[in-house]
Amino acid sequence: MLDHYLKWVEQLEEALNTWGSIGVDGEYRAVVVGGMGGSGVVGDYLFLLSNSYGGLPVIVVKNHVPPRFISDRDLVIAVSYSGNTLETISFVKKINRVKDLVIVSSNGFLEKYCLENNIVFIKVPSEYVPRTALPYMLYSVLGLLDTSGYTIVSRRDADKAVDFLRNSIDSILSTGREIAEYIYRCSRNLVLAVHEPYGSLGVRGKNEFNENSKIPVKVEIAPEWMHNDIVGWEKPFTRDYCVLAIRDPGDRVGSMLIDYMLKIYGRNGFDTYVLELSGDNVLEKILYGSMVLGVSSIYLAEFRGVDPLVTESIVEYKGFAHSIFG
Ligand code: F6R
Image 1: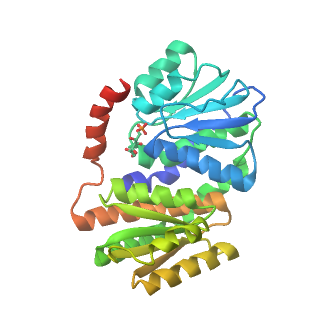
Image 2: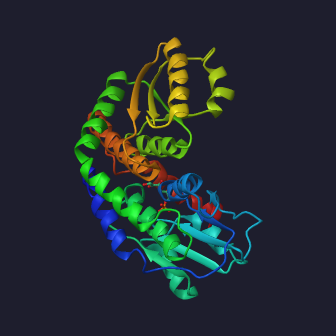
Image 3: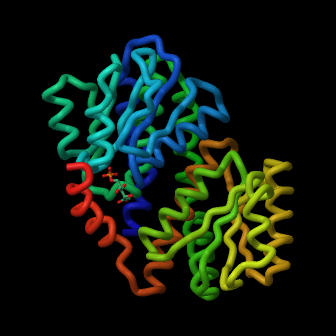
């Protein structure tokens, strides 16, 4: 499965080849992005990028019900890699007041639904699993927005980020392996500590260690952490944790917040490892961080003797979900 991650540069190049080919034509006040799990992360990253660079406000929905306030002044994008996720299908079917709906998927019910209902469809390659198709899905949506006159990331910055990632592969592989060795050696519950604006990178990392390495992970995000989680560390039931902290070295405030967290973790006797995000800008940093964490979760799966590809519990839930949403 490491191959999926090693194809990220190729995926981004492919998505760049279609950049400019699909756009929508409307006057929007916001973009609403619906999707679950690995597909839902596209919305999280769009939110992060729009907050950092500017562009339409982004509202992320990880639910089967769209927010009531959506109107025909909003662009709605639904992302489901398989095209069969029941929450996302329900979200799409309930979108009826909207003029412009775009669906991103590789296959499944949603592809057919688009054809039958004349909905703009962005098809992504089907040889991946949702979490490893993140680069293609993210660049497709960034390309759609740029082409439609609502640029969050320009074509030039998107190109530059691909060059950056291509040149960083060696560092990504060695850092990913080092982190996996650290977590495996520690063999305790993992706390993933991160500072804003990278909260969603922390969540993405958690998802990767959940799904690929089969471990639970607690995500702690500063500065909100300083206002609640920190108190929980005064008297925890167990101190059976180790910490992976993520820091943007170019962010002075973020770095100071992480230092403060490390001080409290140290007081609890936790081991800590700090991942420094490489890159010239937020886009490059989230691509770098996502790939390091993905690769690391694969190495950790290998050390633990588990299959990173199989996500039995999700399959079991999806079978049951028919009785809830079917
Ligand atoms: C990630 C993964 C899950 C799915 C989620 C939604 O690789 O397998 O998190 O992303 O169950 O499914 P899709 O993405 O097909 O809508």
